[in-house]
Amino acid sequence: MLERCGNEAAVKDQLEALIFQMYKSNILYSEAVREFKKRFIVTVLEENRGNQCKSARELGMHRNTLSRTMQELKIDVRQLRAGAKRPPRSARPVTLERKQVR
Image (cartoon, rainbow, N blue to C red; front, side):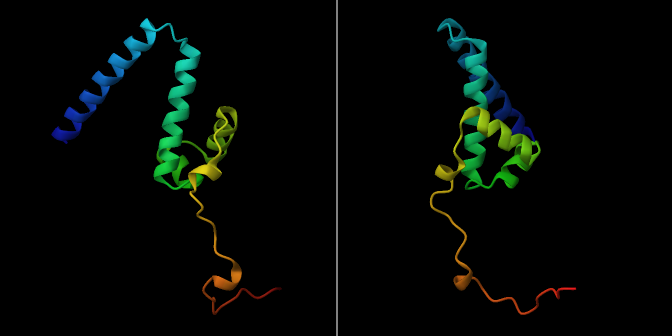
């Protein structure tokens, strides 16, 4: 726990320095917030290979909110999946039990 507190303090110090630098560079608040949100979300999506459900859970938001925010920020999740696609049905393992249709 002690190590985490030290790390959080270092990150906060870096963030404060970055904010001051942005302020001195005349970056508008709205631009700064938009860029921060976009980079934060993209980082979490990359860590989860584009999986929006897992990313939303880690970000502490609903998947629909994440999806809407991604649209607003023009984030294309297809680029984050790195070609990972669901295999075709013929390549998937066969399930032995199927639900019966009533």
